[in-house]
Image (cartoon, rainbow, N blue to C red; front, side, top):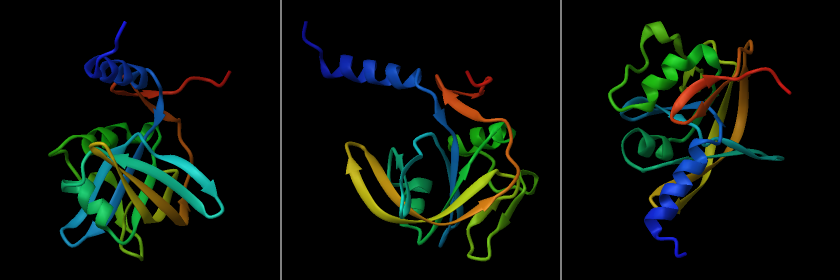
Length: 165
């Protein structure tokens, strides 16, 4: 049986739809003002130097501004932030409102006040992969807070995690 490109794309999407991922919010302060987007592609790469990676599906709009920023802030979200994750996952969502508890770090990046950890980063490499852009970012500092119940992205929806096995 021959697999067509369409069949492979469908199978690939279905495979990752059933593979849970952590949820992050990536923000930056740009010449056009603060920008942010929700990402489920953030992963650690190295400890020395502390490095992470994420991908965006295009390099225009908020994603393009983030890719061009001097520094970014990668917020690792938990269940308290489900509504914010949803707002930043769609075009035209409510962003950087007072109700969402935003402040600005002394270095200028928009910071979500009650997030368990926000990693201030500098993008050190960008790699085009098909229609997406992979960004490799060196972590410059970590801003920590109280932890909350973990949240994952699975089958196009945000979920709370259960107890560990």
